[in-house]
Length: 244
Length: 212
Image (cartoon, rainbow over all chains, first blue to last red; front, side):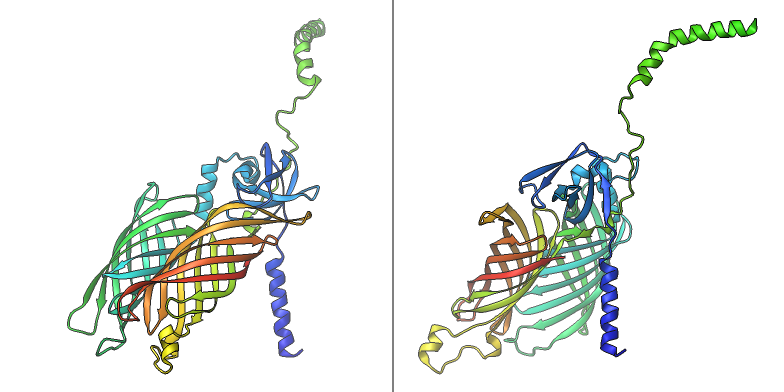
């Protein structure tokens, strides 16, 4: 067998593996389910499924499930209407508990934020991995656009939530990274430079809905420059943080 | 003798309990169905389609530099039915200012500096969800959304902090394939023509997206 064909075979088998998801068939345990034409409350209800009906869970989008009834009617049902159906056998779960459990299962999060970095405008994107409800780690890419220079920041941080049970949860940040400074082309003696940085910070996380929260954060950066003095820079940012 | 007393005792017991037993066993009431079969569901095995990737093209009006074609790509993550986060990257190339065209030879920018590139991180809200009907047998889900965000624009040899906002229309042909029409304004401060001012760069685009 020639190499390209082998590659294609491997790829095909991989897609088979990825696509071969077991059909999730379940009996409705909730009193009834409303089928909407789309994954949102604003899309009209066009059908009602009864308790005891068998449904196939086809796919999800945000908090909506696409289901197929026995008579081949397909529609979107909100998660809230499937709490008893989706709960493990014999158990009756309330929505809050289900939420808390599903959030505990979510290990990845992304976020965007904007703010101020030593007087420059900050744009920031981060991806986080949540180890426990207390500890998570974050990789942050930021750009700070100032009048005289343009900075790129690459940070790896550890976050610690001391009181995860609080509604507004404070957290501490500790980490390090690099800062790349690109001075304005119109200035004399321009030279790109890259310095190592350390940062400490504090933040507040305010949950807005089931899967996302608002974050306000302050970080104090120490840039280990090659010049005589190290540079201390303050960063403020406000952003959205979503779990998936 | 003993059996007689036992029989008598039992018959009395039965006669007193009989109506009660009959009521219980006569017609079973379905309070709990013991035969209800419950299947363990693996929710994680259900395909979730919260990410959306799109490519788009259109016209970007670069303030003072005319209108030119723009192409770009966007990636979105849908958090709830209403809220989504989006990252976008687009590029265009600026034309000439009226001054450059009229004067003939004078050039304000080099070719490299005419490249207009931007990226942004935005949050969008799906408002006005609904259905649109084409003919009598086709119905498609639609949504109008508003979006705003921040980012950076590289133009004229400099990078500028950029605010973008706008609105868009999404029409889904099926569960995972959609058509987008978007209008966005990209605002940043520029001193390219001498004095510093806020420039508006209005973009009109259309594109296709897939959910995965």
